[in-house]
Length: 323
Image (cartoon, rainbow, N blue to C red):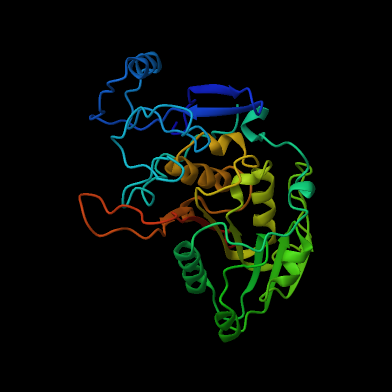
């Protein structure tokens, strides 16, 4: 099973009383740099790190802990290991065993357990990824929309990354937004209607739409905050038309205090696999063979690896059964 139990070191900061974690990766490598720091060597030996990297550090821990290994390509902002070119597209092999069967509640708990209505009370009219990543997301969405589509932007805000001219050109029948902040939703220029709904209140989520309502469902930069992702994805399957598609776009930029533990303890390839598993095991009507992943990130065209430039952007998508 691809998603293995990860060894986690918990640290408690006396000044904030917050718990932080450092996860250990699952992918193997034959070339790990030896650390010159004896303490780091001892930790590595104890954790039996025969994996692709030794330890990747959570962004909140970067200033607190010494670097263990610089052997792998890591995100300069989050210190998360980034995928090489082509890895995302091939990350879904072996998506057979349900990784969520034996997870405890901590996997979907968060550092900040206060109600999301409090956290999202004040509008945030800002992008949470850089300008280049915004352009990549907008271009992708423009390419997957078709004339007269009905679209749901799940976990929407003041922008849906749908170009207004594209929406007009395609004569989109409907662009519905479902989000947490009414001021943000009112400011979204492409929405034809909106609903304010907290998807994290209870597990038996019900989206306020009829069966088979939408050709496309978008979920952007929010999948990491859902504490009932399987229930939500099952509902997405219900409201999609047969043959309709869900497109889940994400990065590794986030409000870490609101992201679920299952997400914060993993790197980007794990994120890709996790999202695909949500679609596969939500008991919805997604065709397993239709689940696929794409790396939309911009890469530098030099060196042995085409490294990601700026904020990464990934998408996992799936199609609802026809018939």
